[in-house]
Length: 356
Image (cartoon, helix red, strand yellow):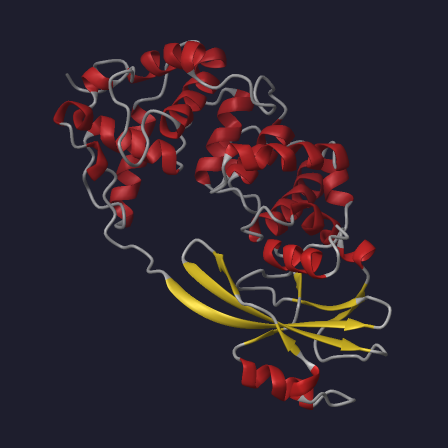
């Protein structure tokens, strides 16, 4: 039976009502601010991780006006540890655009939502579907997996025209009746299937409401979908970190560049190798000899496509001295609220008595 003839939308809507997720704090609301916030946080991040951040953001920034008015460093500080920090910068920029360009009200169509910073086509579709019942598709990683399996869509999604074709087919499957109820539940249902039964490995096909019309499910080869030939290769880097502390217990932190890993966050000074670090120390106003430093055990921090091998080197100076770069000396009470990469925050907390 062809997937369209089998009524994909009706099956997903019915399944979601009884077996899907209906208890999450950003559900059962049509407030686009709350839905948008959750959608941005959930990009490449598990629900269990997002829950705490979502609650803290709403407490600090209860509406889009409050978020738009906040300093970027405050937003980055609250985001710290959630990863993919460009999301936080775009989140702030989007809030400001909603206030400046749309009078503080989120646009009601996916087409206009997608013009805002950090909102791609799929996120725009989710917001428009959940909040305004617009008949518009989404195609995040989970939904892409579900639909390619149901449709038996084996074209290479690394090719742009194939991605566009899948979007067209996703649109053709959308509900056509009772959109006020069906669109939010259908969109959520596809997400739920992808997050539960239709997993990347060893999917649980028997209880799936789409099994008898799913091409991959019937063929027993679900794991071959979706097809994407161009994959990013993992690579490893070694970074040397200077942990410089003054006599008052403050730590020198610098702002990272606006692009690249940990862009825009405050961080310990980073060096490509130990030689560059010691060369930097030798050119400080009061040069530091290698024997004055203490090298700690290295550790690895795993990013999506990169393994960072981090090597902290501690230096205590009696009197604060300036160092090259945009930065300054910060006490624990100050850097607690700053935007720091998660491994840097953990390292400082461990080194200086768990002050956080």
